[in-house]
Image (tube, rainbow, N blue to C red):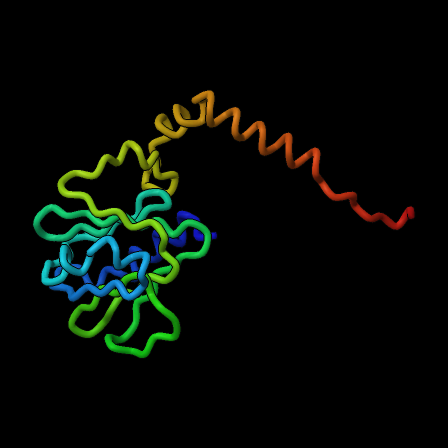
Length: 165
């Protein structure tokens, strides 16, 4: 499962495309229904930012594409036009390089400011917003969910083999 550090690495890998006008393709049928090529092709990528487990790609005209990788998604940056093995969800092609999203089930396009509050605090931010992190942890539903997972883990733990037989 991609964690926050993987998202931060992906954001750094996508930086060479910042400032370029991109050609956009969405070969995967589930991504194609979002019509991203029609909305993003020919626009300049202005910024790429990791926020928690979300990758935010800001395009000229105030468009923000949010990508969340869920369990198996990944971003790859490679030489433009390199043959793909499989069907990528999204391809952002610059002059010499392209960013390819594989298994990326969450793609949301918004106009203007993205509501970052709903994404939650980024524990990998420098410096992290500790007050916001504590507030989130103190919310009843979060604490209850953590307690439930811990309780379930204890109830279903597999027996540990020992030499004592």
